[in-house]
Image 1: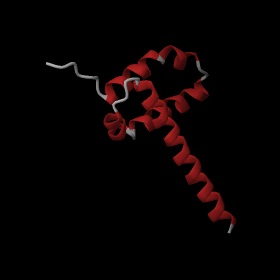
Image 2: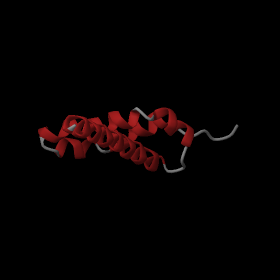
Image 3: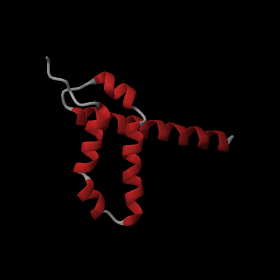
Image 4: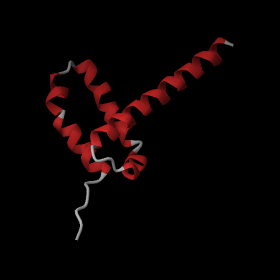
Length: 84
């Protein structure tokens, strides 16, 4: 049998657990923002699973960046529509 890679969700969960000490060290006002980064990365689990990159952290970071880009675009659209 060939070696199987862990799933995207499994590697994301491990990534989040590895960063738990960092999260605990954050001020309370920032912990929710930190948690949302991982929530956003989970939104792209289907694409992350297809990518199956040999370095899963790259896929996690791209997922977080993509989520941030989507949020920025949404806010820009709101600003434009409110300004008209």
